Image (cartoon, rainbow over all chains, first blue to last red):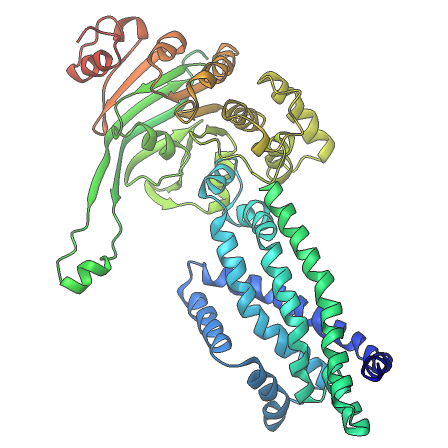
Length: 217
Length: 278
């Protein structure tokens, strides 16, 4: 019973880190959505240099660990005069990383919109760019809803990595508590449960989004 | 006015070149990759006058759909010229030189050409009404209320006044094609092009679509229909155009084409369709 009580006692302290996690996840997701769409468009562009830059970006991000990217932004960039505070650095790192993965979601979603609809739009007098923005992209967003939701949940869990660049999110808060009280089991159990409490309802939301996307398609 | 030219196709050529990349197998075995070139249109001339209904007949691969797709530049021609309502399609003419035009200019010209596809190509994320309203809003820049006022009578006309809120997934093939027709008509084009509009339909749904097309023809709309429905073509067309292997082999009024075809290819086509005795 001591264990349960000790675990519950840790929650109030850990809950104070939740706003930071929300800030990280929302900020990084905003970057990932915008940049991911741009990278996806560059990857299917007819301009070779754009395709090249986007592919290089994708391969560099996917070929290196997120943890290394965060460390690089926080500890290496200052050596060339770019110092970023922990939370903005975390948002930037997570955003740049997830943009690469979301770009692949967007790219396949854009390519999944049947070519006939593109031809129909063109035949009705839509310019190629208007066809993309008014016909193709709105539909690819619907198709992307589920995967985007899943990546969002993954990103919330990956915010824990920002503890190594001095962001006082849930794990860092737990580390600090642990160094003060040494109630290791209770503290990290509480931290794990807190992540679960955040992700479980979100995965229900994703299931609903996916069902809705299927119904309209 | 009766002879006013709407479509003028002059000596149009089109060649399709198959995938230029060698396959993995060809690369591994070092077999030479032969680029496949198929000349689909070999010098086609066609004039369509205002108010005329033209039916293009021909066996598969004769180039009839390609010709239709060239008229609104869904395919780019290799040689020749196409004018719609006096406007050269796809190019600007400067001192006798042809210069490729901007995409926005092509788009502008396409608003004057209605196109109905074999596979309907409705916007799947929009209702029947949404499909008809979308180009009115996005291309013609009408307000929502104005677009609705234009869209509704067109949906009524194709007999779908009671299905306006249905998504394509909740419509039959025939209903989808009628929405597609309403969507093209709502733009008030000078000419309507139909590319095998009933070929993808279950047999029992063909009639409802043909009835709508006939109704539009009777309203005096200029139209060109690529079709395999021989009896329909005979019934509706002012002129029949027969294509074979990239050229027009014969054209004339249905009364003559269907009773006294001159060209052996026309006779072969009609006898295969059971209209002429073999």
